[in-house]
Image (cartoon, rainbow, N blue to C red):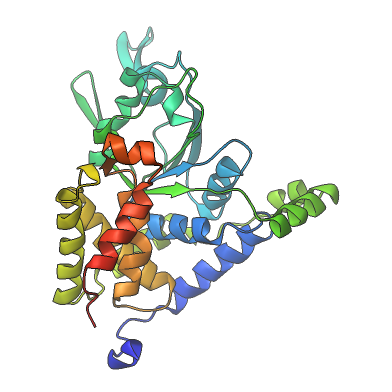
Length: 325
């Protein structure tokens, strides 16, 4: 009923066709994980960095690689390890005997889609190398600033259960990720489909045939389109109330910041676009809120001991707030 009250003002046919094509392409190789794929596409349209968390073997890296393959852009992969140095990520100045001067050699961070595998495996000094580049889309080395090409997206993966040889990401860095996407175990039916697909040895053949769906310019223009979507004042108030409640909730030690509010707005606009609308509804807010907030809020120690999850608290907060109609 709500959709009928608004007249569609934006032509979303190109965006809808591209999103559908990406979903179909990934669906040929990735079994299930529809929510993960939708969040990844929304994150790219919302110009956000994405943290993908899940136990080993649930296709986190494969999904990120497939998303990168679907976009005609410069892709690089960095495997984070305990001995990785900041210069291994950002690049370093190398002496050139011909010019008798130092030349800057770009590191793998200089690209459009950067897959940082197992981000929590590198020590703090290497993790902090991403601080400036993730927030300001630039790198400052030896007093010189190097701008990143647009689009610039960091897709990072991490394993939630492994503590040996890992370094926890600081809250300030987690806050730079638009979404924390949790990849769950497949259902029994999905597991059977995965086994059947692998048994028939289709996956590698399909991987080599993936063609880009969107160009860099397409991403830039679609992002500009999505940013211009309409959001009603009462929807903005709904978002503000959710974030305000996280700061006054007895189950939480740390609530959401204004960056979390902005992240929900941008993510909801992108989700609306994926679902064929140029305006945001309360359902969009409810759907994206857990992915935006689960890494930005901190539970009190007693709630952690009880086994309560951040998603549970976000759900309770939303249930207490009157949904705008």
